[in-house]
Length: 428
Image (tube, rainbow, N blue to C red; front, side, top):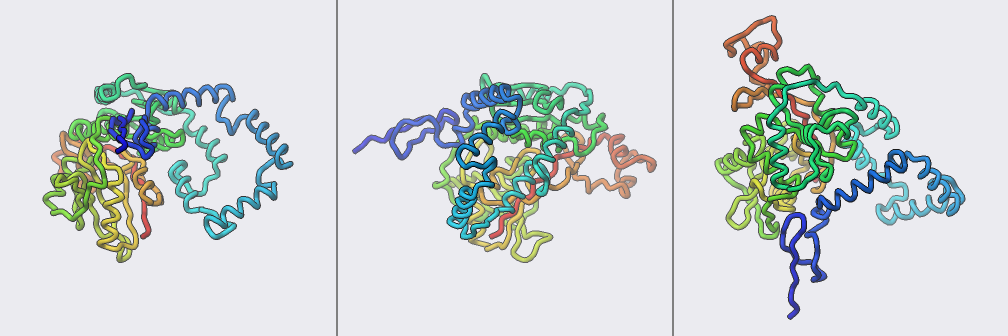
């Protein structure tokens, strides 16, 4: 019998075998793409190329001239679509793949433009000029230094030794400061401390503007609030481990099963493992590895949709665990049991870019505006509890001439804005 050879993944340390029975370096493309060494080489090569060309290759006169010369040499036209041969090949390929020689996947294009630019109708060239102008200078305010940002940086260094980590980076956003930038992982982190929220005159969209600016540059920006770092630090650390692909226990999805679970079980799981905690839900699904509950998904019938439409309210895996394909398996189980016509979910943009939903077939359909909550001590409160018309009856100190925010602040509350939500839908 031929001996099966196994290898240890360089990135996640998972022991694996491949179909060729040859030693390998990575257990999959995801780990290969997260290898700091390869990312560092790629970023260095990109920087060297851009330095030579004086910017992005597509904007370089050298590259433009080469493209035009090549087209003239091969097809006797300056641009691809001027060639009847190329146009005919495009039409033939579209007909073979989609049954329509004029096929144009506009919904996919709209989704991509929404994610990158915030609008499905923007011209890239027009937006590029506007974007560079908008983010070329930032009105950064001087605030007291936060220990939280340093603590986050130190934690990252503890799980990824020798990582390239830049604190208070101003190079990526043309002067806009990022608390932590990890160039090898295309990841940036903002630490939202209470002091800056109380003493800041920033507009509510300040954080989401930074998120969009980073996204345009191919960098994911997450926002860690001081409240989460103090009260949910284990969950935040688990999120960071997941982003960096370090210190996770990887489970085989083929050994997992899905079933509905009682409310008491899902409540305890969500309070311990989800950054937003528990919420009311009508349908509670559990992902089990043997007899161990390793994932929970909460759903409800959509409040605003038609019959058959459901909303995914929460999804979480057990802290410091990874189950590739777990989310998709739970979605498929739900579809088989409840036969929905549409699934919708609102993703917390502070911590997620929605990549898990995109890879599971969901379509990005838009954003919600940044919203806020109030924090006092170790408790977080939704804004709906403090509309100005009832403040007089619930606050010890109240001045009718002050705004809701001002009245809340004199009573020791801090208003904290998030970055809104990403909206994903899945027609079924």
